[in-house]
Image (tube, rainbow, N blue to C red; front, top):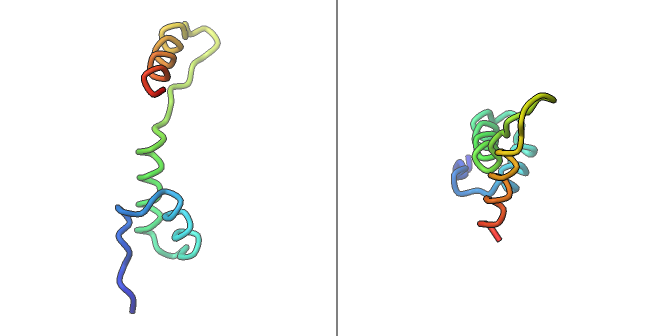
Length: 67
């Protein structure tokens, strides 16, 4: 029996590969989904009548800070 890998230390790509190779391991799947959500948080959805100017300004501001 091999030791369980440390899912916290694995990258998202490594976790994905592990989950695909070990489809019956729920703990690995949950770790992968948690990492995906942490690295790519859901964004807000806007409707056709919403004023999105503030959201666009914030997006551009964040983008400038990253570059």
